[in-house]
Every structure is written in C-alpha cells, then in structure tokens.
Image (cartoon, rainbow, N blue to C red; front, side, top):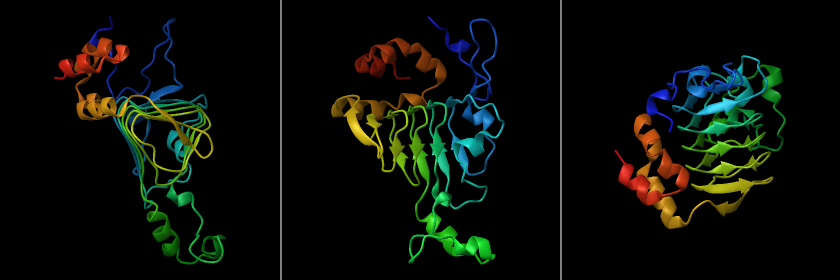
Length: 219
C-alpha cells in the first residue's frame, strides 16, 4: 500500500514521476503552476496538457485577464484533461442592446459598460474532486458541484449538481454517480478537506466505494 508520506506536496509543480524515473512535465499541480490573480486552485488539483507552452493560465482561461470582474475558482483534488478550457465572462460580447458587436473596444471608448455586463455573469466555480474530460468547455458563471464528472468535449453551460455525470453540447446530466442519500453523506464527509495522510489511510475505503468505512476513517 502506498504510504502517506509518498504523496507529493501540493506546492510541487511536477508531481508525477514515470516508471523509468523521468518527470512527466505535462502534468502539473495547478497551485504550483498558475500565477494569475483571478484564478484560485486548491491543493492537489492537477492538469495534464500536452501543450508544453508555459502560459498555462492563458490556455485554461484565455479570456480571463488580471483584474477582470470575474474569477475562476477550482477546488481540491480536481483533474483537468488536455484541452480543458474555461470561457469566462470577459469573453462575452455585449448583449443588452440591439447589437453584440463590441464597438467600444475598437473606438477607444470607456469599456465600463462591458465590464459591468461581464461581472453580472459571476465567477466560474469548480468544486472538489471534479474530473473534467478531454477538451471540455465550461461557460461563464457556471458552478460544477463536488464529485462531478464532465465528459470529453462536453460544453457546460449551466450548473452541474454534485456527483453528476454530464455529457454533450449543451451538457446534460447523464446519471448521478451515487444515490442521493450517498451523495448527502459524501458531502457531509468532505474528505477532500482531510489531511492528506488521513486520506491516504482511508484510500481502501475510497477505492472500494465503502462510505461506511470512510465515515469510520474520518479524522
């Protein structure tokens, strides 16, 4: 069994070492790799992206600029596959008037109306223990609940319930991973906030899907 002290620290940039001893530089812990004032990433959340260009924040959220009215918040123990993109609110064109064309950008006018409209969409929030599949797209102001799975190439344009599996464009709930009463117990346990040593000690219960054993392991 893997020992708790073998788990990499959350500040580790490259947490994955391959069997041949090479460090896998396409896999990074987000907290260590991101430096953007509008992006927050929780401990142990990671991204595997085969584009090795250094601008990870720009790839993940290409329209989110420092000082934008919205934020991207990612919880702990999330997994982001290659090509995941967050289309945050600042990507939006004006839609309150008769045209969506951004005249003010090209004319040097005050952009405050655009900023105000973008801010109304709110933050994009990813809960804890969320898996975002290959080339998934998350639209502005969406909240993805804890334990959710987003299928490859899904376009998430509305909130996702905890422990739901969503797929398609627009993404729709395919199924819930567990019965509602189990989801409630997992939400209450919130194991993602436990110390990593306690999580690793409870790994057999997590891997076996044994909620009762996980409850008994709670620190």
